[in-house]
Length: 588
Image 1 (cartoon, rainbow, N blue to C red):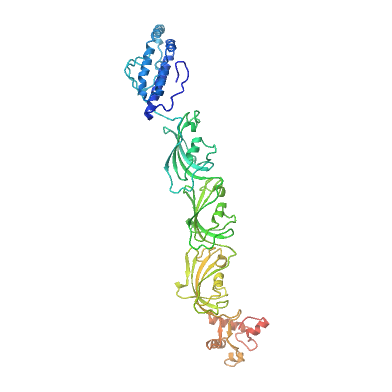
Image 2: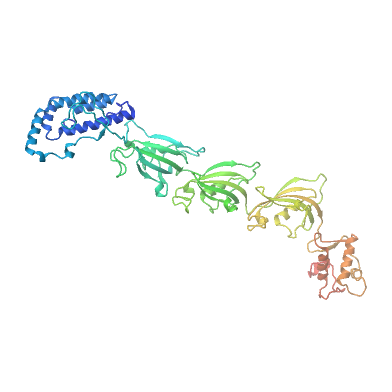
């Protein structure tokens, strides 16, 4: 406001008004009225007498301003203003004469427009003038009640600090914002009266910046400290911690307090590493994943505010990959190492170990922190053998164990390492049968059965390269590690490699004559089959176990019928032991 000498007042003295917002409102109304009256009094043709009065007595505006600034109740200033106005009116004599002369010269058409005559007034006042109010140069009638309608747009104090109100705080807070952190957040910005000036929601992305590095106004730097991802805050910033006396463009006026409603999406520091949190650790973890292992796992991938961007469960298929070989983002490569089969862990990956400033696709924005909740199904190394654990052995001594060529019967339960049940021989109520070493079962199971005693129980962990490989099988996922529990029910000693039938003792001295039942010098298939079956039934010899006897006998006859004429002659018949020397064929 202007003083009587035309100088600028420093404005209200902070801390003097103790009436709260209403006090500030009243003070504002009074100061505006003082400005109006002062301008009216100093405008020509009033100024000569006004200046003469101002030179001989204290200026009423300075007195009234001091009253407003220092008074505990602004209404007490009204008598002061009334006294000052009365003193001013008593010195209006010279001005009244000048005014009359002016009117005589100008005539009726020389009157000033209403707009000029009303200059210096404020519409709709709510300040009520007390007894003793007098006329103000024709602008305010004597004993007039004045009303001012005041709308308080802003209020602040030089002692103010940033005001922070927590509107919503998530139950889980992995970390809080600190100086030098990089944050991504949404905001709505308004003035103190609610006028909106900016919002991040209309830009289609978050506001991304460093905290405490001079990239933000000071008040926002302070207001973001201590926030958790997912937290909502209301931050009120006084103008000297915002855009100060200059404001910003056309949307933020000078000396404006700013109000921000903030939702923190995520936070990280360029120095951050991968953060691991074990959610569930199965008992008996004897092996942990290392670089070079091949792993199958399920995952849910989300942003730090909980927004889901991908899930293997939605595809009903595990994610299968090598660990520590660069096939996946660096943070996941690191985060999966050290995990156990069946473990559930949370892996939080900063953007510089994920997709960086550019993000990927339309679901992972730039500079996004990624959170993976992982369930490890299994892992193996391409060099792994079959892992054998003996669960129980029969009480009696075991002198002979299963070996290649043996015909075995066994019960089994087969599952994945996460416990998913696949197959069981108990479902059929009969044992499974196989000849070891004959490629009748998967390689890992064949190896695991060898060396077992009848009645023994084992647990076998079979890696996929010794099971169904990358492609899997019906009911078996690709690259799956299989878990077997097997019990050997019986074992029949097999035959040497290449043999379909052997005698327990020496063969007959005249084998062809014994085969030629009708003594016609040739052995047809019927005679050959009758003879072999008789040898087995009499306990003199045995066929390869686990195979169809008729098929084995038929194969034996075909091997001996060298000219394929449907009968065997004495010249054609040879024992396997004799043929081994000639390396002709591998039968009988």
